[in-house]
Image (tube, rainbow, N blue to C red):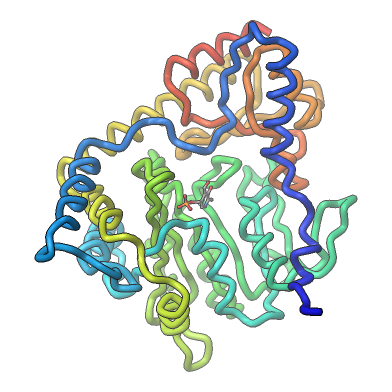
Length: 404
Ligand code: PLP
């Protein structure tokens, strides 16, 4: 009999979103007259900006003619998009990143899951707690995480870096040396951001210890404060210790269109071997490139019209985030996030667990959010709301919460 990858059997079920869906369905069935407002979703709701729609249409038309038809895309990405990203996302901020250090993909979820493949099987990973679950689960699949303890909801061979009120939701440098450090700022789920000086400490640590940082910048477009870095390459020395993941999902509403990128500087080396060459080999072998049409839409994000329209869209979500943040605060809740992020992270009142507060909010306000404990043990006692709903729903949800 053939054998399966038994590491998959070690994965605890991911019950978070299915549990939420079940609870909401049961409540709706029992209370068909109640209207539910969902502020739990991590998906955008605004349509694509006109400049992007225009680029999509025009790229589709190109595909209709032999002279302008495009077949397989270059597996590392079209030059026009790689250059647009290098110029706008990096060089405009004074960062030394060139177009050929940017690998275009269909999103940050795949890249954040696949990147671990280029590292040794016994590499030790460090993650924030709470955390975007993909980082841990993909390392479980690769057999890197040891055994799971259901009581503590932790893996024996993973270094957890708690992010709680006590450290302002910013992790402290680990006591034990990790090989791979996953960082995501602005953070999902806490909405926390770190300053350039704080991030510099991680870059210095990684360079000193011979660790690599995988930096997920999926939410950089939501940064409003001056001293928060939009990319880890704003830190000195990041070229020798960091890989960055970028996503068009929350920046430009591409959750259903699919586009992202991984940035690997050529100076990032393990001995003589550049990680750039390994990822290029991996990409070339296992990936056939994001569609031409989609990459054209991505380039429109950096057009003059695209930039203006996308800024408006992000401002819309940021207004929702501020509204939730300020509304909850005035209602007496302890809240964080929101300022540089579409996520609002609140402390559950009266020592309720995350799930108790979920039930409470669903029943008393008919509002759905996400229990913090679903993102890791240090998320217990917290709750995530998102700014991705409509403004009208956001206002209505807050009114309901205030009135409980
Ligand atoms: N990284 C983080 C931290 C996320 O929260 C998400 C989506 O929710 C992703 C990556 C996925 O991004 P993409 O849609 O580009 O795959």
